[in-house]
Length: 204
Image 1 (spheres, rainbow, N blue to C red):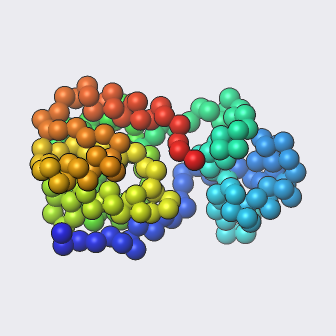
Image 2 (spheres, helix red, strand yellow):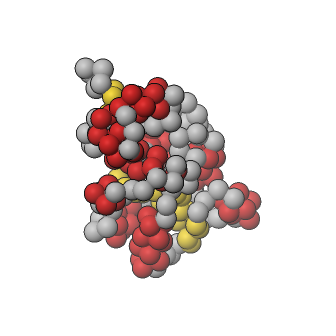
C-alpha cells in the first residue's frame, strides 16, 4: 500500500444542522442551562462554538446524549434528515450504479480511492461507508484499520463491496466490517443492507 491517511482523518465539526442553544438543550434534558454548560465543558455533550463564542449542540449529538443516558427522546427530535453514505470505488461506473441505488433513501457522496475517502470522512463524516477493497493508493483493509483506530469514527458502519478478496483480506475484513458483499452484487441486497444498518441505534 502506498497511501496512509493517518493524521488526515481529522473530524471537523461542520454540520448543516444549525444546532440548539444550551437553553433549548436544557429544556429537553430537564436541567438548567448552567448544568448543560458544565456538561459541554466536561465533554459529556458534543458541541461547536459560533463566532460569537456561544455554544450550539446539533440534533444528532443531543439525541445520542439522551439515548446514551437512558433519557427519553422527544418525538420532534426523532424526525431526522436522511442518513448519509460515502461510496468508495475506483470504478466510476460502479460508483454511479451504487449512488443511483441509494439516492432515493440517503444522502450520497463519492470517493475514488481510500486516501480520498479518508479526507472526505475527516471533513464531513458519513453515517455509513460502502467500500471497495482493491483500490489504488490504499485498499479497503487499510481504510477499515484507520477508521477502527480513530476514536470519533470507530463505530461507523462499514460495508465492503468487492470482487477481490483473498483469504487474508477476507479474514481481516470479517473483524472490521459490518458486512461483506461480493461483486457482482444484487441491487436489492445493497439497499436492504443500507436500510438495515441505518435503522440500528448508534453504539455508545
